[in-house]
Length: 64
Length: 206
Image (cartoon, rainbow over all chains, first blue to last red; front, side, top):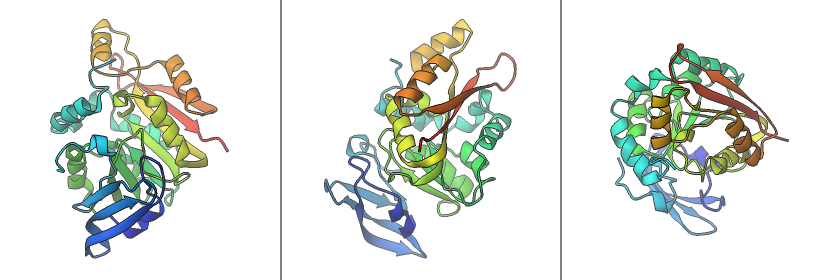
C-alpha cells in the first residue's frame, strides 16, 4: 500500500484514525507493517503490500 | 436466510468459486451491462471510486476505463489474487481486505462507490448500504448491482436456497432504511430469459 492511503483509511470498528508502523518498504510501497487504532488499539496487519482491514472476527483464514 | 448469508461460508464458497468466477459471471452480468451501469455514474478521470466486493476485478476493469485509480475492497484473498494477475498488485488499483458492512474508510472519502455481484452475500445489506453512504461525499453516487428476483421456479428455488435476491419494492425499503432519499432502479438483462440484474443508482444526500 502507498502511504497516502492513510488519509482515507480508518478503523473498521469505530472509524477512528489508525497509526502506521512500517516493517518493510520498497519503492514507495509499504510491503509489511501494522496499523493500530488510536482509539480501541485493535491492530490490522499489512501483509504482502495489502492492508488487511477485516474486522478480527473475520480474520480466521490464513492470508493468501 | 440463505446458506451464504454467513460470512465464513461465503469465504469458503468464494475460495472455490474464484477459480471459475470470470467464466460463469457473464451468465447474468456481461461487459455491455457493466459498461451501461458505469456510464450512469458519469465519472471524471480524477474521481475517487471504491469498488466494494471487487473480487476478481471484472467491474474494476470497466471502471479503470473511466478513472485513473480504483480503490478495491474484498473479503477474500483468493478472489483478490486473481485481480492482482490482471492489474498488477501496485498499479492503478489499490487493494484492501475488508468487510462491506464495516468499511475501513473515513466519512466522505470517495466521489462514487460501486458494488456489483456482492450485495447478495451481505448478511445485513442495509448496514452495508449505510456504510457506502457514509464514505461517499454529499452529492456523490452509490451504485449497487444485485440479482433481481427471478421469474422462473427453478431459479427461484436456487435463489431462495443460496443468496439474497430482491425486487424493486425490497430495494426501495433497503435504500430508504440506509438513509438514501433519491435513487432509481434499472433492470438489466443479458438476453431474454437470462437472470436479470437490478441496478440501483443513489445520490448521497447533502
